[in-house]
Amino acid sequence: MIGRSRQLVANSNSSRDPTDSFSNALGIGTWNTSAGVSEVFEFEVQPSVCTMLRTGGPSNHWLVDSIIFSNGSCFHATGHPYLFYTFSQK
Image 1: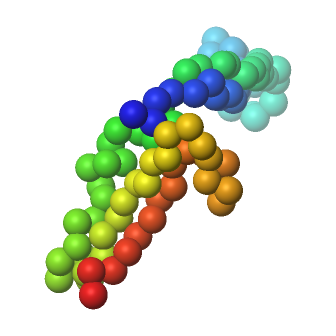
Image 2: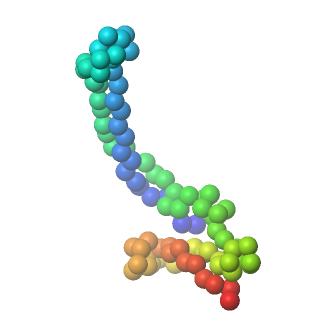
Image 3: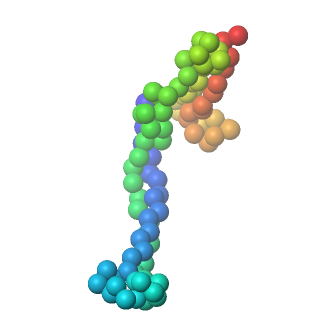
């Protein structure tokens, strides 16, 4: 219900020529480096998060985790239409 959003993911790579064992052994030589940014559509909240929410009771110290969702508006605290909230059963 929360959906996906466009997110930017940074990536980088650094490597040496594996055939130049002499330079590699001395820690010198040319490094090949690259960096970039990718645009992906990813879940705002990963589905696996829902499997880790506390459900209360003595084993969870009477705490219950929740995700509050408000369709069509955003919470001021997060700027998103959802909010993570923990409340006590006591």
